Amino acid sequence: MPAAVQHPRPRRNRIVRTLAVVGTGAAVLALPLIGATTASAAGSSTTSASTTLAGYPNNLDGWIRESLAIMAEKHIPGTYNGIYRNLMRESSGNPRAINLWDSNAAKGIPSKGLLQVIDPTFKAYHVDGTSFDIYDPVANITAACNYAAARYGSIDNVHGAY
Image 1 (cartoon, rainbow, N blue to C red):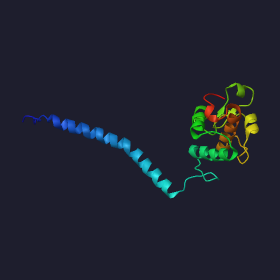
Image 2 (cartoon, rainbow, N blue to C red; image 1 turned 180 degrees about the vertical axis):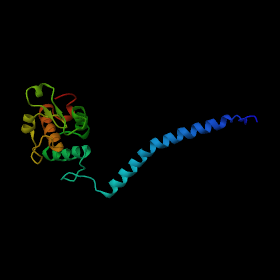
Image 3 (cartoon, rainbow, N blue to C red; image 1 turned 90 degrees about the horizontal axis):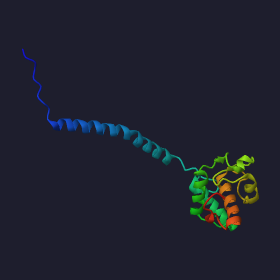
Image 4 (cartoon, one colour; image 1 turned 30 degrees about the horizontal axis):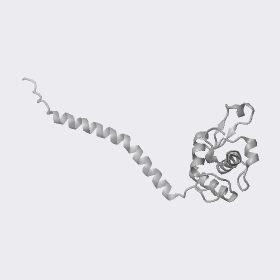
């Protein structure tokens, strides 16, 4: 008995199969992202956002805003944009950043924190009402802005290493 003859499948079926495989692959890739988004959204709605003692969000935006409030009380000039621009250049927004390779580090006084301040400058320009911890984001920003105001008129006038 002759073998059964297979009929050629129409081209349309091959395209449909290809699209189904591609679509399934995209869905498999997207599901973890959708799940993660859903999970984090659900988690964040059940817990309150972390805030500083002053009530600002405990994140880069909150640290800058809290520092600006202190600066306004102490008549230290500066803007959100000036602070943000400088700290992104100096530390990429990492409050624990430390520079271990420049000339200050070679002298044993590395630059630290969001705005890369050295210990003597931090101590000299520390602003009352902020932490004495150089890594504290608000204290670091406020002291650096106080220094920049004394040296350059404002953090807004700083466009490079200072």
